[in-house]
Image (cartoon, rainbow, N blue to C red; front, side, top):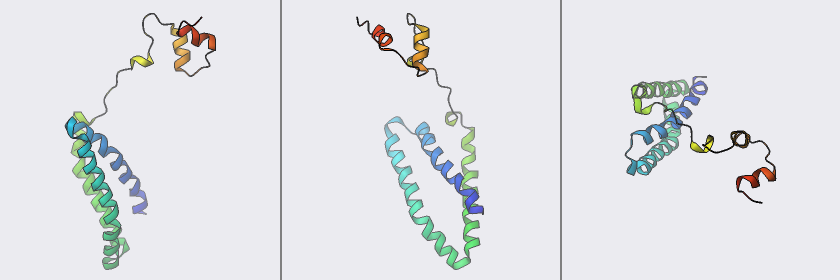
Length: 131
């Protein structure tokens, strides 16, 4: 039961590692750092089942599961201080100019376009001043 309840947290850690590394890595080394991260994740995914299988054979399945739970909690504790870094928190993104009405544009038309409403051929030709 512990294994099945804890497994989603391994997915969350894999999803959160890449953006954190992007934030702290030098811009010219992001690809290299992400390659190391992917290598470590894939190596762990390849080796861990064998290691835990050997452990289960030697000490029992329950012991192997609880060792995995302990390792997961230890990893969470080691990574918890990263939550205090301002650089690793979500940033507030400014609204893109492509998603707002610019001076001189027809506000109603732009809102219809951004909402995905149907635009008639006449409306579209008016954008490009096609007669």
